[in-house]
Length: 359
Image (tube, rainbow, N blue to C red; front, side):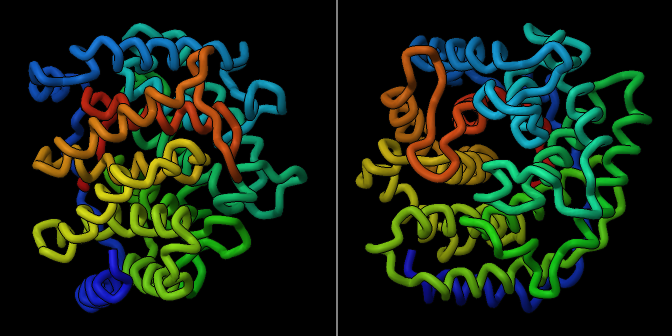
C-alpha cells in the first residue's frame, strides 16, 4: 500500500480515539464454533489442509516438556513466549484444559505458563534474553502470556483465581511500560510487531474483564512514525509486509474496515502474497506472526478478501512444511516452535475455536 494513503488513514483514526476503553466482547468459544463452521471449512474438509495441520500438531505437542513448558526449538531452557504460543495453538485446535483431543497437553501448558509467569522478573531485565525478545521486544513473552491467559481464562474451571492473579500482574506491567510515544521500546529487530502484540494482548485482557489503562491513540501515532521511517518498499519488502499487516490489524479494530483506504491496503497485501513468492520461501517468525494478524481480520468479515486470502496463504504454507511436520524460519526468528505455532494459528483460524476479542 502507498505510504501516504496509510498515513492519511492513521492520522484520521488518531483524531477520534483517546485512551483505550474496551468493551468485553462476546466469546466465540466452542459453542460458537458449532454454529459458524460450514461445509466449506477447509480445516475440516480439505484433506491436504487437515493432514498438514495434524502433522504440525503432532510435532508441536511432542515438544511439550513434562512440566508443561516448551523450550525454544526443544533444546533451550523453558521459554514463556514459546510456551504461550503453543497454548494458543491448542486452544485454536479446540483443546482446552477441560476438553478436546489434546486436553491433557492443554492443561499441562496452562500450568507451565503460570509457573513461568510467576518466576519471570518483571521489574528488571532477565538474565537471559530469548530470540523472540531480541527480535520483537523485551516484553514479547509477557504479551504472548497475557494473550494466552486471557483466552484460556473461561476454559479452565478451578484455575480462575491463579489465572486472574497472573493476568493482574502482567497487565499492570504492560500498562506501566508503554512508552510516551505509544510503543514498548525500539531495541528489537521488529519493534512494530511488539507494539501491536502489546496492543492486542491488552484487548484480549479487557475482553476477559480486566481494567486497562493505556493509550490506543499513542499506538496509532507510533504506527505513523514507523510507516514514515521505511518508505522504500523495494529495498524493505519484508519490513513493509509486516508493517502493513500490523497496521491492518489495528485499523480494523478502530472501526475503519469499511473505508476504501482500508480495502486498498488489504488488496495490496493480497497482491503481495500472490506475486511475491519470497514471502513463503524466506519467511521468518515475524512474517508468520504477521500472517496471523491479517487472518484475524480477514476471517471476521468472511468477504471476498477472506476467500482470496486463505487459499493463497494455505498453499504457501503447505509447500514449505518440513517432512517432520514443522515449519522453520529463514531469518531472524528461525525457531521452529514459534514458526510452527504461527502457521498453525493461521491454518486453524476457520475453526473459530480460539476466542477472539472484539475485532
